[in-house]
Amino acid sequence: MEQRSFEWLEQRDLALTIPCRGCKAPIGQPCRVRGRDGEWHELEHFPAHHARLNRAERLQRMQDAPKPDVTCIVDGYGVMRSTMVDPI
Image (cartoon, rainbow, N blue to C red; front, top):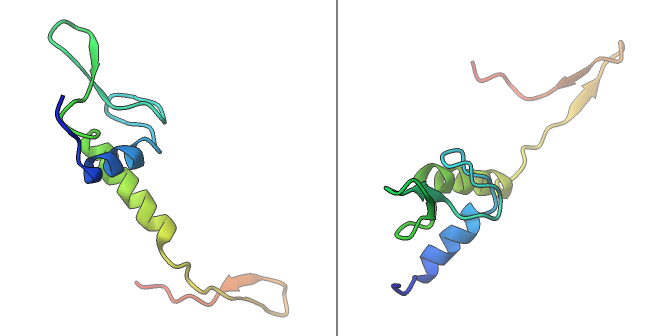
């Protein structure tokens, strides 16, 4: 077994925080692949499936992003509306 780099281990830890849509591995379980013998084996050369890594990184970026400053205005009719401008 080869020595894993710190980056590889970080990616694996991040990927384990969400389920894999490819192999259906639950949270906390490593990704797996079906071998020629029909048995399921853990991925050895990659920390997780590419889609799982991308999704985990995207979710982490979304959590770390600053929240937009949204203020609500109450008019005479008690209707709540946002002051954000529609980009379209």
